[in-house]
Length: 497
Image 1 (cartoon, rainbow, N blue to C red):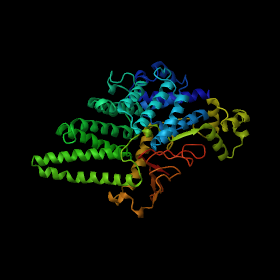
Image 2 (image 1 turned 180 degrees about the vertical axis):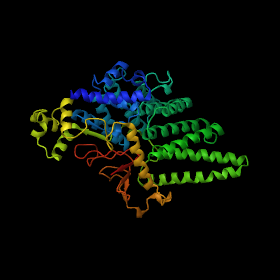
Image 3 (image 1 turned 120 degrees about the horizontal axis):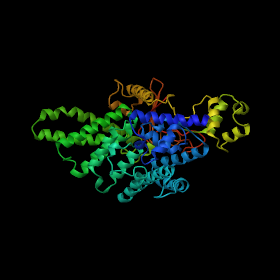
Image 4 (image 1 turned 90 degrees about the vertical axis):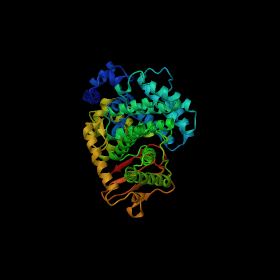
């Protein structure tokens, strides 16, 4: 009975989100599973594999990284394997990343071309996505990388460009793979494809953080395609340059509103070039007053860019984004065995007391020691007795409503930025003068044992602001059993109470 209730909770969440968005089952399930299978999932009549749960939630705008996920020990070890790969790619340890990815392929993503099961296809998609990043770091031919990305996209979006992208429901990961495949296409891709992707993102219903993860990248790729095609001094004409500037401005605003920095340097660089062209055109027309009015904007843009360049150089963080591992990071993933053991001891509860009426003491000990997986019904009963929710628990806020989650994000980000860029701080002061109690890691990779290019500031409110250049890990240098991995995404600003 408990197991059925657990399935229904996920199904109800998905069904409500889908209906609220006005999407049909066929639209949401396209490329993942059949509409009939989605109907079974929504009714709680079938178990949903973890990767498929993530894909469905993401297509409906629900960020899986914002929720706690409890996995049995085998799934958790599977998750750890993915995190080790992400860690190595982020820190450009490409040889080790490639070796780990090959082990992952053998164990989890062995199918090629003929993947029928949705779990196999999603595993294969992850493998190809990571391999494309590794090959890019190693300087492989663009055509070879494009082939990998095209296969990855086709695994869940087989109708790409055969049907309007704007009429599809896609996850951020799928949109990212489409962007990457288009970028590596011969000639840098088609301008209309980039614009169609931007239209799709606009209509996707993503929250602020979701938009920050993909919209700025799409804008940058569009601008770069136009620059490479028409030349930096032309951009396809005045109207086109103005249109691109509007895109850039909106992308920067999206990042500012949620305190993220994905592709920020690249966007500021593009804005600088576009503003320079606009000033040049106005001066050629003899409109010096209008050109002068743009100078404060250009100066502010230069200030932001210089600050970023200075900070990135000081902490050895690449100023340009070269990977997209941050899209695959899940912050709230825990092993069921560890959670039960730690929570029981924290509450001072004996094995006999916790297992009474639920399972045998031997079964509980085997679960806690990662020697056995258990039925979801037993885990749910144990979690209930320990005062834990079994699924879809917000890491900062206990809720199943996306609206409440977004409100909390706005509150946190607003208060962080009010401190971070307060009235008393100018752009130059953001270079972290010594009076602001900055704690800076020495040697580049010493923070939290293995984090590179990170520093934290402790504001008066008691929050700890951490700006990270990658994924931080346990003292062992990778996610492990000793200390829970602290996942900080490239160029994210995160608040930790």
